Image (cartoon, rainbow, N blue to C red; front, side, top):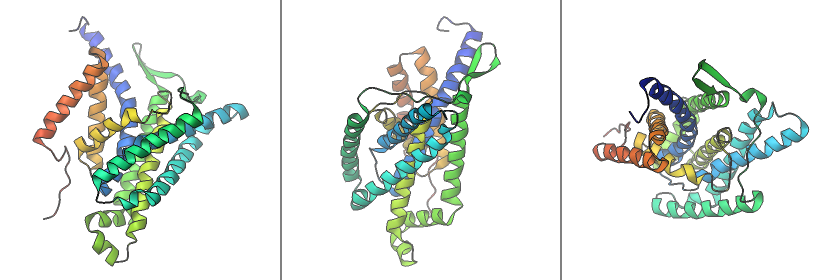
Length: 305
């Protein structure tokens, strides 16, 4: 098959599968934020990728500070927290000045946030330059694990997977096990009734939107471990992230996880045996075919009639 022996194909699938896991973690973190903003609030945020870029640039800048003052081995954990907080704060501000005026107007949110993404890209370009930059990783994130002589698993990839698992668990606990998550779900299901029982629905909207943006900031920090960062970095993932959310089911965390894993693995493995563009096209054709049979996604939310 393709000129490879069965043993070689097995090693390729394993290596590309792990490469797909690195992509999976970034897609999952991006899609978790979108699942909250789009799935719970119905806002089509085309600037979501730029919030990822905020997290990436934050990590890059902190890595330079850490290299200057000699604490490179310790900065990355703080960078994740600061990336989240900064993206959260910017998202909170954007919701207040723009998004809150556009609820229940999905086409307007699409156009407005697309314009916002262009503005943010220009701000990045003016502030950091057009060239891509990279973060200096801590020494403990370098190197790899070798389960067999032919397979190398990067340590930074393992770290990012653990990070994605922790964030996913945190989102689940926030949305389904906390009082605030109960307020979010109540506001989504019946905004008028939620307001009637004393829930500040405007505040719920603002914090929920900001949370989704903050998670994108964490995705940006994770992204710096696998690639360099530029002004348009976020646009490379926004389409795939929306595809993950729609394919998995807009309001389903389980669907988001399953969809992100399937799409990342399919693209990673197919792109090895095909060209990059053909691998993406093949994956997209499969997704479109499945959505024609299940337009609500793989894990549709069950609504009480």
